Image 1 (cartoon, rainbow, N blue to C red):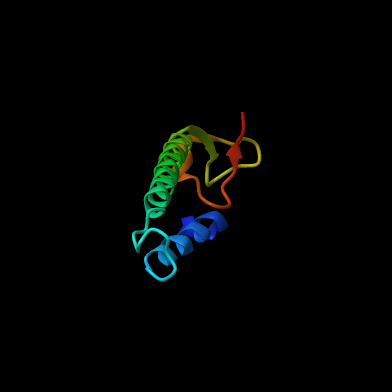
Image 2 (image 1 turned 30 degrees about the horizontal axis):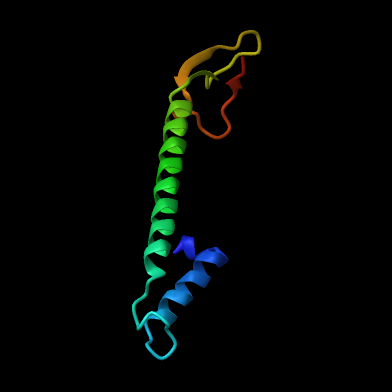
Length: 98
């Protein structure tokens, strides 16, 4: 459905529906323009799936990067940092940036 938010795809969808009516159609009721519309939407869907896969891989790589988080009990003289992965970092924790 996201593909039909583009005006060009909506236009060609309307033309495909109109071609199904013999009264309006010059192709005797055969939606000839449906094949190119299907191909364009199919290629766009494949491109979107590929981009989502790349984004997911990038997110997983970033979430598994090691970082240092401040210990829960910190004394005023010494602060200790424990190594963890980004996926385990919680809101409010102190993170050591390198």
